[in-house]
Image 1 (cartoon, rainbow, N blue to C red):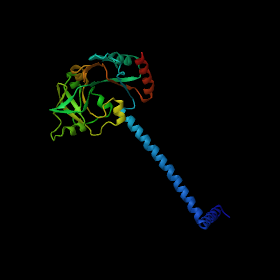
Image 2 (cartoon, rainbow, N blue to C red):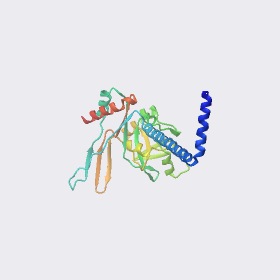
Image 3 (cartoon, rainbow, N blue to C red):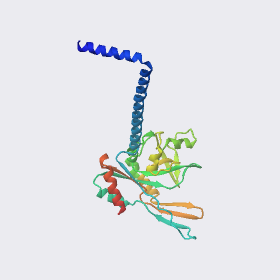
Image 4 (cartoon, one colour):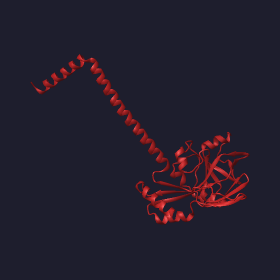
Length: 274
């Protein structure tokens, strides 16, 4: 008997056995179907979770290290004290030390957070105003949907211009074109030159960038924020005034490669501890 004939005979015997025990055959097939299906489902869930994690990392930049100034806990003060100056956080010298010490650092971008109220006419807007470099938006893949972004001319001339989010446009409750509108940050007028794409920062990204989760972001040139508002801010509370002096609210440090992120972060932590 040839090999082919033996194989055919074996297959026929197998089919006869399957048809002879239909219930056992059905249960076996059912187990195989559920087993294979569960494995495929688990692999799909794992692939989806991996894609989600990578997309979240991509929002922050795989080479970006974000260092925030954190306000220290409130200290016990004298009962009749009505005002004080709170100086804390990152300093300009910290950025220079990181730049000079860490050979794996590509570039460092400062961020200045402006603690002023924002107005459109007589309407107060809930917004976080951030003074950033022109390359800041590129680092976090923030695309301008309408209008234009910052450029070096705006930065060098410290122009009072700003870029807003689409969510803030909806808060305007107006049908007018937002490009060219004038917002007032504190006592200073700023012209809207661009509107970012509608997709906002996710909660983890906003937390990493120390952005108020209840507010939309307004971006102004870093040089404008420093010359106009500086590092000194005032917060008025009931019965008291708090003055803060924070030189750098945030530093975005870009490592030369993804592999250098963790060593660079450890070096930065050591420098800041000193």
